[in-house]
Image 1: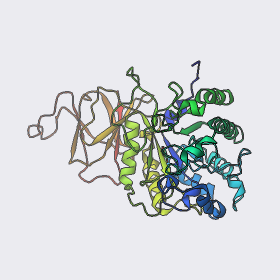
Image 2 (image 1 turned 180 degrees about the horizontal axis):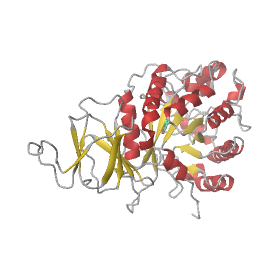
Image 3 (image 1 turned 135 degrees about the vertical axis):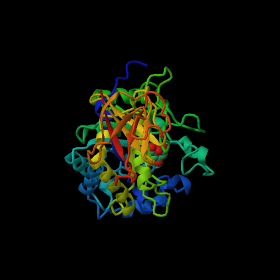
Length: 428
Ligand code: GLC
């Protein structure tokens, strides 16, 4: 297979928290970004959205500010989703943003605005394309139940689509400045008429990408072993350390939604609570992962209140607690997490962060930390947390015996006013 190179993930595992943005024509029907699949909509019937897409309230500076305020350090923006519509000015298609009423290259505006806020830039590009005339109809395609599926497929030439895919990849990687992540989505070689690395020309594609941007991070959805710099579980948070088949820890990023859809969905109601959102971030970092949290802006171009309020909740929490996120990862295995808690650890500062997800009464015992902590404080306000070694307090004769080597922290009865309190432990 030859050398596929490696991306630079150093900044990525430090920054930990990014914003995914799913935005395309599907924000108009507002019924999920897979609407063409679910409702089996032909190109002709989907045209009404192309003809009317006009996000008059689009202000990418507001998006970028919302992301930065939430503590997010990078963005991954959809240049094209499965519907095939391009949010950038491509010379290889007419099915693009600059040919709509809007008429502007929105990718450029997004990239400029997020860079100005200091965020790194990732581009999501769909391998699947339900609009392109050469993309063979498979079991995911809107025309999968067309009576002439076989006949239609005779004139569809995947080699031509492959060239289109490679050309557009080159465009988005050369026309928009330094791109830090390319996020392809997705392969499904096992499905009927499914597609994988041969269809995409994955090996050649990766080599081309590396020749343009040697250090770019490439995700793992090209169906090409060895080509992925990051593992990308979605709608699922691994609660263990993620490793390769030899047991070596891998770099991973969970991509998640605030509600049950990636694209704007007006009527979807499974919005996560602010607490759940913060728990998710902590859960990812505590297992050495990144969190890529998604927003789906409306067709008028703004992030609606339901999403915005959750971003603001991140911001309120991150303002005081981000030290337990940036530069942090999984804690040394010798320190088992107490009940209802997660550790993160910063190996450079040797500080261990205890996230208390469910507030206990007065004490928490930290196994194997007896004699190992020099100082403890709440992270949100820097106030000291008193420690006792092996249960030795005023009422020690009444205390239940704590296991050997445990360190007991004395907690206020009332939970501090921060969604998930964090205790910063300075290891000796
Ligand atoms: C899926 C879906 C998609 C979404 C993506 C994000 O593979 O096809 O709609 O863009 O996951 O990870």
